[in-house]
Amino acid sequence: MSQPQTTPAWTDDNLMSLQSHILSEERHHPSATGDFSWILSGISLATKTIASKVRRARIEDVIGDAAGRPFGERDGINVQGEQQLKLDVIANEVIKACLGSRANIAALVSEEDQEPTILRNRESGGRYAVFFDPLDGSSNIDVSVGVGTIFGIVRLPDERRVSGTEAILHEKATVAAAGYVLYGSSTVMVLTTGNGVDMFVLDQSIGAYVLVKSKIKLPDSRRIYSINEAYASRFPAGVSRWLQWAHENDYTSRYIGSMVADVHRTLLKGGVFLYPQTNDRPEGKLRLLYEAMPMAMIIEQAGGAAVTGSGRILDVAPEALHQRVPVILGSKEEVAHIQRCLDN
Ligand code: AHG
Ligand code: MN
Ligand code: MN
Image: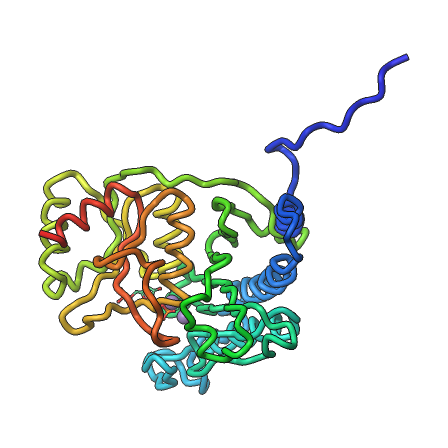
């Protein structure tokens, strides 16, 4: 008689959905409360919905601004003083609708909203704030280039006295998880809960994110840079010096103009992504809470570095919800070299 088979150990070949992955991570942490599975299931639903809207953008004729004016005649302006496209608004509403009923979320902070959406206080169970850029690179939708959603989940301080924006910007608020979804040739979610970086691809046929790569590691160096070089005459001298050196040292350049797509390539292939300050934008363009900070956590968790030029992005103490910071992130050695050029 044959012996009963023992259950095989987990192998890389097993099919793992985002949901099962989060549940299994939580099982390894006895103190886990199920908070992440609750929040991430909302983000999963929202981003699947946005993915479907993005794919159907042309078909459903949603290209245009929030007021429905055709391309070229837009004047819908968001809180950043930038053009607001119809899909930015839709993506924002979808995320708020999917996260609004999650009982442990205290507040939602969106690129598209001047003020945070306060859902509940600490007494009513609100322990987290979720920061998001609902649609990053949205001007690229017109030309069917990859766009994305960026999010950060922040654990709020325990003090019951602080609430609202004060709690969100509090020094004891800590980033607990970060991720992005790239709506590209496939829909990809990259996620970290502080235990490495995992990548999931949306299998449209079953409607689930499936784990395709865990514990992503960024190469320490790679001769690729990603920067909008049209602004070269306005960069800090250190960045210009480094670029000059890169030109003479066999670097190649890749710049899509969607942060999610540029960071995703940097994460997988290595190299460095920069959006430095310029003479006319001394604080840079990218927003700390829902662009720079989530990407910095992902890149650091993958073994890379993410700095502003004067320190780690993750060490910046936020002073305002829509604050901007210069961003230099990617392979450790490339970032360190740029930092040396900035310091000299
Ligand atoms: P958003 O669409 O959310 O406003 O972000 C656009 C950002 C980012 O995706 C990208 O890295 C950057 O703008 C590109 O800016 P430039 O056109 O100045 O290069
Ligand atoms: Mn953006
Ligand atoms: Mn955006």
